[in-house]
Structure formats: C-alpha cells, structure tokens
Length: 193
Image 1 (cartoon, rainbow, N blue to C red):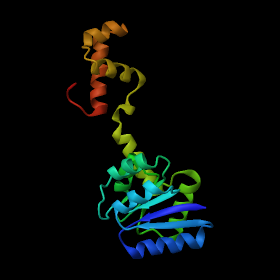
Image 2: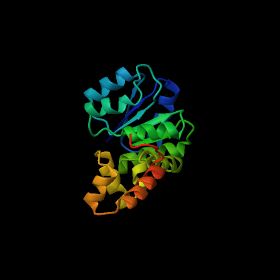
Image 3: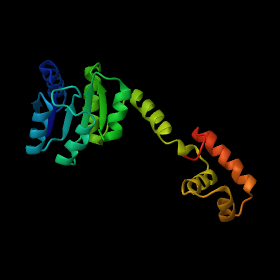
Image 4: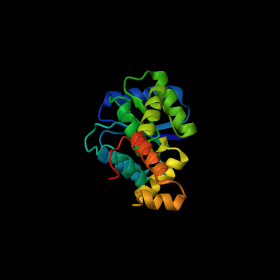
C-alpha cells in the first residue's frame, strides 16, 4: 500500500489529484492537508511514501519546508506542485525536493511524475532538466577551469602571490600571470577578493 499526502489549500486541487491517482495507481491511500501546520502534524504521526506539496498555502515557509519536513521524516519523497515556473522548481530541487510539477500539467504528466518518484525517487520534466543543467553550470563557474587553472586558483585563494605560486609549482612568473588572467576571465572577476 502506497501512502500519499496531498498538501494544498484548494479543496478542488486535492480532490482532483486524488481522483487521478486513485484511478491509475493500485493500493494507494491518500490523506489531505490544507495548510502547512497540518502537513507537519500528519508527517510527524504517519509515514508517507510521497508528499505532493503546494508552495502557497497557509503557514508555508517555502524552501525551508523541505529541510524541516526531512528532519521529521528522512525518507519522505517530496513532489512540489505549484503554479510557479521551472525556475522556482529548480530552487526547490536544489533544496532537496524529489521533483517539481506545474499545476498546468496534464493528468498523464501527474501520473508519470508520481509513479516516477515512487519507483525511482525523482521526477524531472524535460524543461526542468534543461533549467537544472543551466543552473548547475552557472552555479559553479569554477568547473570551467582546467586542471592547472584550478590548481593555481586554489593557491590564489589560499593567499599565495604569483612569486609563491611560481616557486611552489616550479613555473615562470610570467606563466602564472597568464594563468591568473585566464582564471579571472573565466570566472568573470577583476580582483582576487
């Protein structure tokens, strides 16, 4: 038996999702919460396989909900179900949600998302995957550095000057200056600070 909690302050949404899931997933028990306080209470007293969570409901603490709910139930799988676009979805995925689904999604997409999280622990739509890829690449500009550039970058961050790095790596100071210039360009920075 799969236990799902639908946390949304709109009764029509709760009933609609419940009807869709009960018609497509065997052996499912669905509970409801219409605010974040009840959501926390239910998760504290029950073990759920999946939480379908709206972001804008009474008592919401937005991204902090993910951390707080995982403290209560570590294995809880969370599907964010929201009117916001994938840019917001990416933020919640980065906080630890297992998936994101727009409230504009079709019945088929809802079923695919829920089954995917129940079976594989995650659901990312193609649009979300694209945004996640861009976010990850832009979130870590250091990943653009070559192995040698990263080595010099780390020495610069530790407070070493060109002369010290030159001596440590047995490389000419002019070469260090060239690497430093490339690092600054790749990271789009003007100074070490």
